[in-house]
Amino acid sequence: MTSVVTAGGISVTIRGAVVDEGETVLDRLVSDGVPGSLASRRAKLWGPDAAPLAARRLGWLDLPETSRSLRDRLAGLSVEARAAGLDRIVLAASGGAALAAEAMCRTAGAELIVLDTTDPHEVSGVLAGDLARTLVVVVGESVEADALHRVFGRAFAEAGLGGADLARRFVVVAEEGSGLARAAGEAGHPLVPAEPDVDGRFGALGARSLVAAALAGVDVDALLDEASGLAAALRQPYDNPALALGAALGSSALGVRDKLVIADHGSGLAGLAGWAEQLVAGAMGKDGRGLLPVVVESVDAPGFELAGDLRRVILGRRPDEPGAGREAGVSVAGPLGAQFLLWEYAVAVACRVIGVNPFDAPDVRESRESTAALLRSEEGAAPTVVRRPPELVEGAVEVHAPEDALGGARTLAEALETLVADVPDGGYLAVLAYLDRSGDAAAAGLRPLLARLGGTARRHPAPVTFGWGPRYLHAAGQYHKGGPPNGAFLQITGAVTDDVPVPGRPYSLGELQLAQAFGDLRVLRSLGRPAVRLHLRDRAEGLAQLAAALA
Image (tube, rainbow, N blue to C red; front, side, top):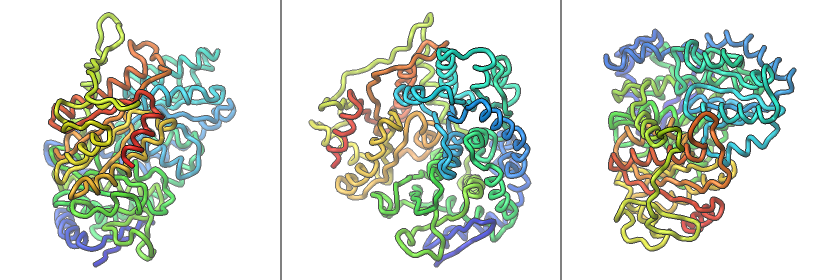
């Protein structure tokens, strides 16, 4: 059986058993009046406990229209930047804002450097570029954005900039009245107010994402037009693709299919899968419930064809297209602006179905507080992190694990096989790489290798996810701690050969990065999650070793 729901340029195709499961949930959503209630911004949709926060977080529903008020401000900033020769745009942000802006620019072919990292190698690579042409957009007050703001401020000053010349090298996006907004005013940085009733996770079409994209050359009006085309359908009980997708996601999370395998198959929307991953995992993964997104490289990648507790989603396939992946449970096609609104609405609906608050992130706070505790120091001294001797060393790779966690493994290959074999039944393995997304890009290739190993080391292969640290902390990190307790974790850190001090802070980027890694690892282990850390004494050599061990 196949169901196709089309409206506003979006097509959602649902096949097989998903149709029956989703239709039951869909009927209940319609009878409860959810489409009208959500379109009317009724905060009690997610229960009385969630209502106070939800009342302050539903502005994303209106962004296809309200964000048009940014047009003149963005046009003015773009003209000023071009006149000053500033055409190298760097975004210092975190979470959904960074991922949405990255998707917009990759899809449009616009150049934007996204820094949502504390890796000193990656940041040093950007600092080594042409600073004379560089404009930095700072979004929000995360520890990453704050550190990068300080690092670039020093770099510009060392390049001889000061006064008004230095001030205009930054554009700040922050809520009016916030500490960052006040600091921007004092420094003379241009400020674009961020919507107070929208957060980064659900705010793909808001100022937090659009400012950097517009400065990089993206036609944001076209994105808003695409979203507006879908917006009219969101009040409808039927012929509403976002409601149908939300019912499918919610019914999966209620049943045994609590993993969502996402593969792009010719959508042309580069980066959309990564943005959707942070939305689904962060909004739904809490209170022991949720839906874990597993982004794979293609429909031919290891892990896409796994059966059992997985629901598959194809991005880009229309219902009449033949070819690989046609049997996927859900296929979604449509332009990027409409996709942002589609997924935000669908995930909000799915959270209603499973009974969680989509707008809070209680377990992200735990890792943040653990990191802060590690960074806390006396009399301005640099923070220290206690490093225990590794359980195993092979070449450039150290293996750090709790006692007896490796099951007597004597080689790196045996340690990896033990970790994969010990993934709980019905669980997953998450690879968390605190490395350089550019210089250490080979780390992403470990996901398919581990997924293939899981197919031989286990009777029932486990899904394998991959995330860059600290990016994943604002995305799947919420699910890791708050979702079903069935994950195992492989964290990877690397030696720092060229650290970057953070002006005004008693730590460097390398120390901050290690504190973030250790802080999250400490929380995972305190929750009883199996977690192993690999430390690469030499990054390139260590990654090559890992690939060889898995091959």
